[in-house]
Every structure is written in structure tokens, then in C-alpha cells.
Length: 101
Image 1 (cartoon, helix red, strand yellow):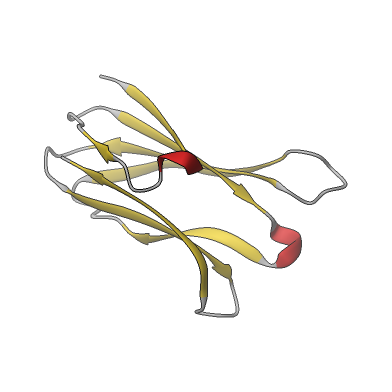
Image 2 (cartoon, one colour):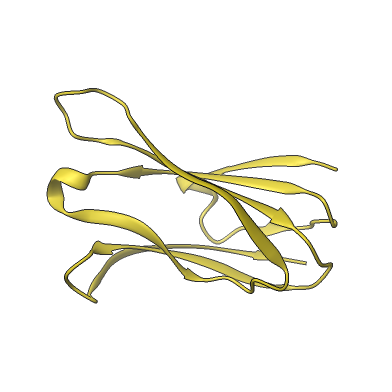
């Protein structure tokens, strides 16, 4: 079982994963702007979400880190997509994607 840490510079990467591996995705989030990271696409038969939390970096800046941890529950291949958007708008300001097999 491996623990893989993914950050913004890993956008577009491909991961070789095994059942039981955990993948931590950490992305900068600015809730003051109204934009939040949401899961856009994940096959819940392959990956289970075990944590989804936000931690403020600098109190006055409004910026922080969105950390989502997934656990691989089935050996498969696919894409995991996160979308940064305002909750009241369906318009996506940024996407983050990685493939797994």
C-alpha cells in the first residue's frame, strides 16, 4: 500500500496504483473569491473518498489548501477530475486531472 501526494504541478499526470493505495490531492483554494474545488469526475467503484478538508494558509489572505484523499478500492483505469468553480455558477474556472491505471 502506497501513499501518493499530488499537487497542482502534477496536473495531467498518470499514476500506476494498486488496491489499497491512498492518493492525497492538495490544491490552492481561495474561498474569498467564491471558488471552491469540487470533484468533477471520479468512478466511485474504483476510488473511495476518505477525506475532504480545507485548511487556511494565511488567515488574512483568504487562501488555503483543499485536501482530498482517495483510496483505491478496485484495480482499474480511468481519470479523476477536480473542478474549481463558484458554487452558484456552473462555469469552471480551472480543472485538475490525473489518470490512473
